[in-house]
Amino acid sequence: VQLQASGGGLVQAGGSLRLSCAASRRTSSSYAMGWFRQAPGEEREFVAAIRWSGGSTYYADSVKGRFTISRDNAKNTVYLQMNSLKPEDTAVYYCAAGRGIIVTSLYSGNAYDYWGQGTLVTVSS
Image (cartoon, rainbow, N blue to C red; front, side, top):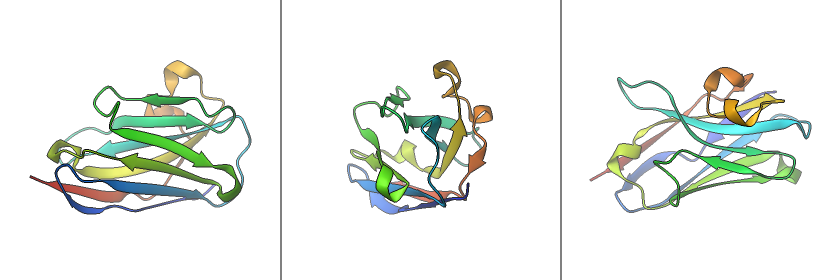
């Protein structure tokens, strides 16, 4: 599976962006899709995840209530709607896909098999 992330850019604090992650082919219902981010000099961190089957969603505490992950099965695409952006949200955002990931592992990048190329989000103060 190849993943193509897009939608990053420069936005002022308090603004919004929507990231997209398009998969090259339909993934099975056992897949989960995740968004991670990595700020300069920082480790990669979990942002959000969604299961293709059932659509259960999971969020990092730092983005809960501001970010929304969703999926469009017909387009094999996952979205990350980011509202009320803060300067500390500045990072390269990566989408990832993995099969058969248990709930407790969704938050770990090591559980995912496929990664997109990343899209840069810059939030100015």
